[in-house]
Image: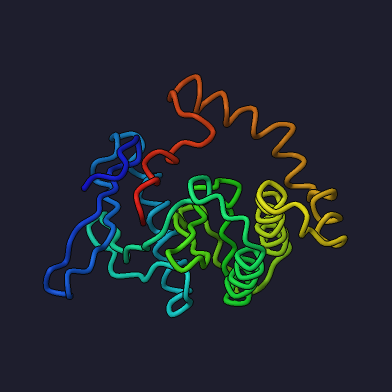
Length: 216
């Protein structure tokens, strides 16, 4: 089943009948436009590195393989945040704990403003997908710490949308104080991003949200 097709390739869900009818997700960068293929491969490599680093952490897809331009990871059974619209405070407590585990392992997701990258499992637990922009760093550089804080701030923005009454004073302070990198992005980089994605490529801000209504 094809989940997504864009300039950077095709994402499909594939059955593995030899493994108790389990499913995997394949990201095929070979199908990318020729001029976007190097970037597509780079993004897939980043995702593979992040998933390898996060092996064994619940709520993160399991890395299967990455060869000949095809990344294979496990399927995560859940609904994207914008569809599930969870208002359970426990979900956001668990989501914050999940982010803490990512950061302790040396991974900043770096793309959590997008609701489709957050899943709500059938049991109501948080899960994450799409690690193409993830930063893997075990030195905890200033850039890593900034991106990790932005991960948390993006989660809190979602919490403000779905469960605002449970925001703590400290969380409100984090929301009110974006990092310098975030401020620069909002004032300059995001404008360029929106121009390229909306005007040139015809994408929307929530690009991928429709495709990701499928359980992943």
